[in-house]
Amino acid sequence: MKIKSLLLGIALLLGSAAGYGQLTPKYYSLSGTITSPDGTPFTGTLSIELARPTAVNLCSNPPSIVAQSLAIYKVQNGVIVNGSQASFLSNACMTPSIPYYVQMFNTSNARVYVDNWYFPFLNVTSIDVGTLSDVGFASN
Image: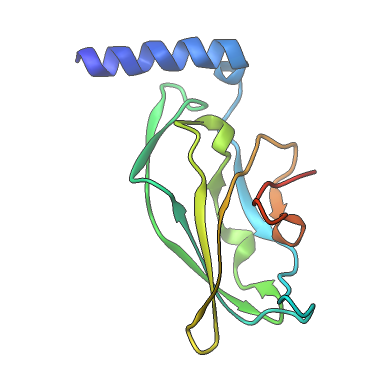
């Protein structure tokens, strides 16, 4: 019970300081075109998961646990199949603010890309993965 009270206290303190206590959790779908290093549309798979087992969602009321789960998407000609149905919580809502661990595999199942992505609190509903830079930050 002490831990739950401590987590709630931290969440309320951080939420109030950052204004998150008044925000609803921000979830994003995935869109855009993924290109290979040579500029051609990528075909293969994209896997995304939290970089650690759990985090706390400070944007929910009351704060809730976000569990690590692996999401795998097919990518065909640069387009994420069913990316519009994805639902990734903004890292700005999480404590600790941990990244999403991202890997891409080509059609031979060889890993061709690995990175950490952060989704800040944006006024959009979908993250255009084609605009993510090498360090994995989303932008407007």
